[in-house]
Length: 406
Image 1: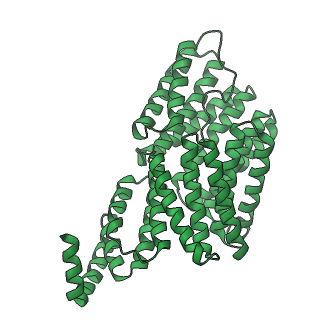
Image 2: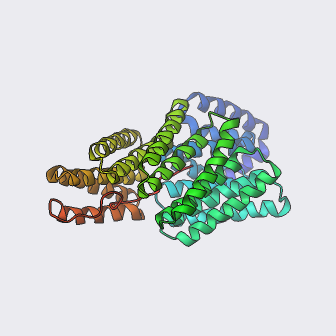
Image 3: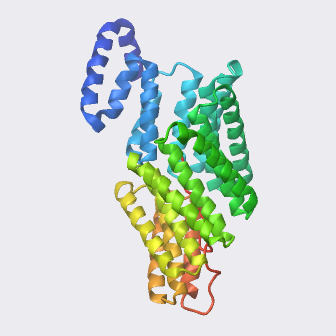
């Protein structure tokens, strides 16, 4: 009935309603954050394309900063927006899939993501040179690939990442300097490299990380302050450092981690971005693991504490982010590992209890978080053996988790 009345009013009182939308758009814009959703609704009545653009931009920012209340309000607004073409419908679904993934609803993210991909395919069927549609298709395929990876569907994950790279290659053929396509290609290559690294395919992973870094260097040469490229660079370098530590190339690992820290610091100067902060903490935990492998337990403990401090700061502003809780569990696990190596059994047991608590919170927020479930199980195994004569091999045995990126 509400929708029917709206249609009748718009047909019979179009000029009056347009003026009302203009006044209300201005009013809600002045209301600040509290008026965000209403301002987008009334703006969409005046210009549906502007409304879609504002909705997408606002939801992307809300997802990146774990503002999930705002995310839900925007998604609830979605059916009331005017959507004039398949490209715009695909963008709405792509954002909704990213929200579902961010909140740990991975199966839902996959289903919605494929709907979005099909819409972009329909656009490309009539215009294969549509660069924005190619970039959007790559973005949603990366999101679906990440959701599959979280569910350990690694074959399906690699297939999505590979298709995303193909879409980016096509976009760059038509627009060689398109930053979004190049950054998406780097993200997809990094994601495949992560899976190769987990399978100890070190040579393949190193080659792919290096190719991703070449794409990111291309972007940063043209746009030195590009936040996403800096964050991706930091992640690729820290991941490279982890592999180098696995191969006992400790000096090379230290160099890679230092370069990663510089990239994250540069990103955080531009903006106090949650993703950059989360990934910086993830790299600090990776450094802790690397130091432990080099038997430098004091430095490992220091890096772990630094990582936990960053996660705690993030969680004060984003307590519903299950990924941060899960990654905090990883950092605490490395801390317990080094404390155990120094035979500080009491301290290690206390930290393991904190690890289990962080994993529990991640699972409360996202029951499908397999990495948090693994972390909790390993904690219980350690609590049963800590202080004894046997312990798993040092470094990297507690948990390995891919950070959320772009």
